[in-house]
Image 1 (cartoon, rainbow, N blue to C red):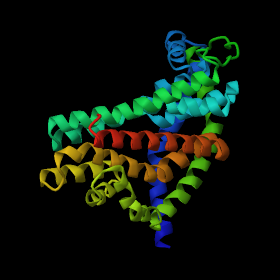
Image 2 (image 1 turned 30 degrees about the horizontal axis):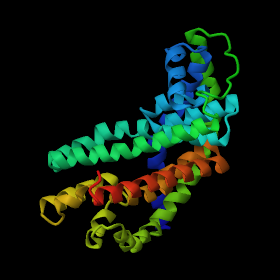
Image 3 (image 1 turned 90 degrees about the horizontal axis):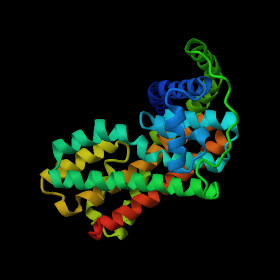
Image 4 (image 1 turned 135 degrees about the horizontal axis):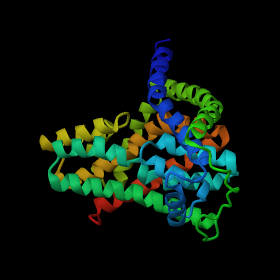
Length: 316
């Protein structure tokens, strides 16, 4: 019973932060469509489509993801509903949005804590490597998008634009049009978030720490891996724990960057169950949402593993 109550509270906390951005994403997507390509979209969105290889219909997701990743995903969902994007194009759009989606986290979370707790050289190196990892994920998304379009930029045909509405009419249409998909996504997200949080609160996810020694095969001192495990539930908590260990002389400066990347690697398991999977299923539905979450998780973990090996060997 205690686990059920804890899972319910955790689910409410997730929905409190996610649902507003989900609604905003749907609203802004509808507003752009109803205004018939104004608000800079005639220049901005085609440029994004050309640079990324994404269909013009979902280029907006990359722009919105810089403010909130849920808003970016919601924009893709609306574009899929209106223009018939394929599953592959949706997955590509979400991969391309990886780098933009971490910008806000970098500015308001990572940079302040790194500046306060780490020597400048270590902080700059980690931030550069960490953002490079997400930039690489976005580039892989671009490559996938171009592969799907046969190398053509913005290869998905978009239906002819409707006549542009005036601002009041566009706002009203966006508000009315986004409620139904919003409620559908909210129900899915609530159900999947509760299931995921119950799985976490019962302690099953924590058992992943039993397999931490396996990461020692990458070349990192296995004795330091329990410190990385502190970031399983909270990435910021793991970064703070490594910083404190560095100050106390427990962690050598040379291994801080790969250790922090390992914190991210482990935290991604928690994020998959607590946020990414329920978020993707809530936005895209069970079948496609599972594909989106799985693709993002697999690509992210593969890139993080590569970065860990490269930093251990002094390549980065």
